[in-house]
Length: 401
Image (cartoon, rainbow, N blue to C red):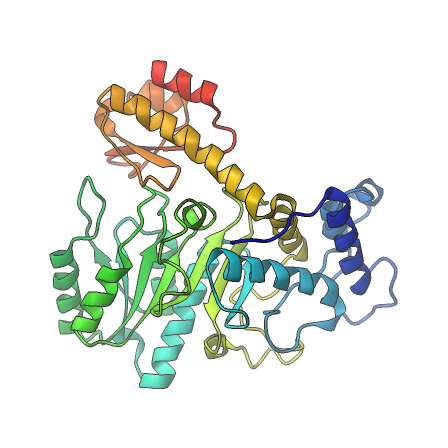
């Protein structure tokens, strides 16, 4: 994993150059585009002069479509290239894709990445296998992100929820088989597997080989999507020998957010998918868009894509590794202190989420430190997430409380 870091001056120069290649609502003679710069009667446009991100917010480029293949809206070609470059860093350097083997875009959230993948595979099964919606199932851990259930509801496909062990949070093999057999008996024939790379409740990483082995054993058609919403900028860096990437032949897509660990603005998810799959969700009716639209959200803020690119280029690969190592070091310190006090917790060693058993947490501690439960109505675990602001002094205070 390697990409070079840029200086602040180099970043500013690249963004200004990209914006100069876009049309500008402020400076260009443009009358046919249904958009404009930020409202100058409310926002101070001059305040952004020395900030490439704020300048891009004011310029307000639209990043509709997918810029890794085909045509894109020519009005904003400069910043579209910035988005394409950051997709390349994520796909090739972090998730080990071969050059030109993937597509992707910056989505409004990691939720969309999960639903987008399910949408693609639903349509894939419908077109290639003549499947009906009721014949398509989504296999997911009970700890999976709620967006998967939302997606199943929106797409009218069947959720198949896999129970996990109370303490290891691992999907149980026999439970997997039992649920698969039940789904098959109910007419489900095609499956979308959602594999977690650090779910938000526990930081659990699912065993992809369990999915592949059982699905192949039952000889059912399947596609696998990796939900790396939380772990995508931590786990591959801390555990570079992991297999949850595009070197695995059965992984077709990965979604990751950049607003948690990377600290980009909220609304910056990243969707990555192998080539020759996005066409299953092309919106042919969007004929007014150059290159058509292959995304769930359509129009998206170009400023958000610029923010993610700026962060990746400011750190470079070595700087990002250092950032992640510092966070994991503090997580290790927390767990060492919990061990000394014989406190029951769950933690993947390559992630920065620590779930502490409810028997150790008083309501005063939960409220004072803003802990979040696995279930608001019947909490069994309380989550500590060691983010950038969770420094050693705060960890010490929490342990000593």
